[in-house]
Length: 116
Length: 112
Picture (cartoon, each protein chain N blue to C red):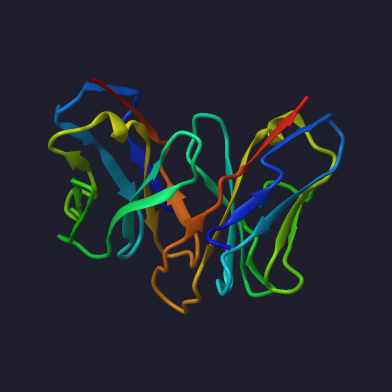
């Protein structure tokens, strides 16, 4: 596709429900990132994949959060037993591979999660 | 760890006014610095970047200079337009491979 796509764009969950958020990166981008953006705040890093390998998950706030990218393309961020503090916009970004330095990260439109 | 601090917003200006949005950072080593912009209803877009001290990034009339001595990367534009209304984020790419660290964002509203 032309850019990073995310689905759903909006998700309302009742507290305690599990949710799954999907990210389709730009074709050919092997690096994929997830960020969490609380209302009125900047994005905060959650986790990073290179191909199917999860190289950094230091930003995941609890063991209720789990991300996967089994075939090195589409990624899913799963949140188990959602809590109200999980309400945020979840951003996905992808970039070309790089072993050092910065490669521009292209962001998707985000999924706005509201936990009631 | 790495951190980015932006000036408090929101910022409201009249068209053709001069814009400055302050950004300072804390990081070890020599980070790369960025300004991202988020227009209403759209995703984050890279506006400009600078990868080493004294570099000036520029795009769409916006400029920012990487000042290592003051650990700053202030965003400026000489004459803003209504279409510049958006949220602006300062960010750095530092020692943690892959990870961007963002400031809290500054809402800019430009009135005709």
